[in-house]
Image (cartoon, rainbow, N blue to C red; front, side):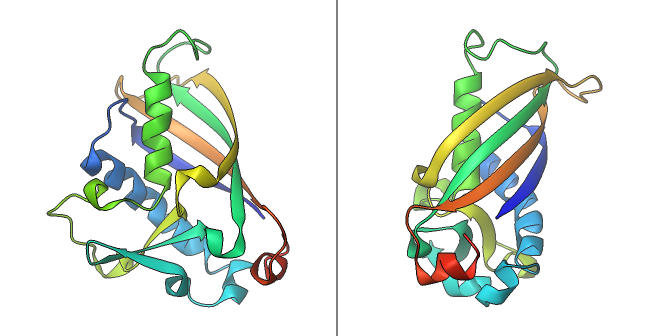
Length: 174
């Protein structure tokens, strides 16, 4: 299964719980829509694969119940010139912020005052945990009309694979 997620906004190298939740909420709408299309539509309600964190529900596409894994191809558009992946001190921490935001949060990653709205129950995430990422390919390009210096535009191409076939992964065609 393949699909692409997009994100426009800040990607802080030291993203706190609120920043990561803001990213999750933007991706949530796309992931909730994904559950209405084949093959996920055949898997039933996304809430069947949810977990409670601090009394709030989260669900993920890639989870261990079906031994699913994710391969990511990330195109990172930013104000800076292409390259500098290893020389820019913050890009590795920006990726860590992104990986955390792609995952269901741990209790300390949920802002204490955050209350999901009715469309965010459960909140859809890509990953149950970022340890289910098996491959990352990162490409950087200049974002010619970036609205602010810290803003990025991300295209995250996701390929869902399986560690080994299960009933659920076969039903997904993986």
